[in-house]
Amino acid sequence: MRIGYRQRTTAGDKTICLSLPEGLDYERWIEDSAGYRQYLDEQIAQHPELFPPEISEGYWLTGFVESKKQ
Image (cartoon, rainbow, N blue to C red; front, side):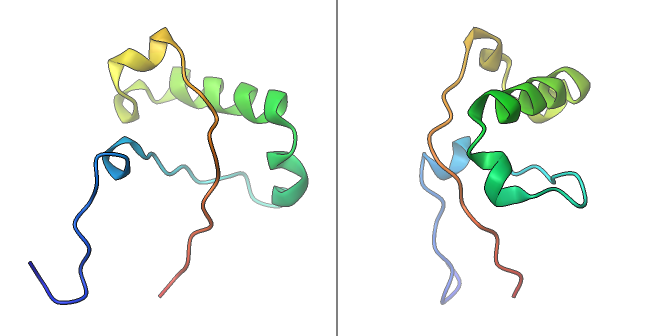
C-alpha cells in the first residue's frame, strides 16, 4: 500500500459520485430530497451501468460528501 493512501472500506465501495448540472444551487437542492431523488432516478435510468443491479430494489439517501480537488 502506498504511503498516505487509505484503503477503501466496504462503505466506500458502495459510493457513487455523480456530477451535477452546472449553475445548480447545490446547498438548496440537497435540502430538497424529493427533487434530488427525482434527479437520481433519472440518472439511474440514463446510466444503469454506473449502478449495481440491486438499486432497482430501492435505496436510501444517507448523506452527502463534498469533493475536494487536490
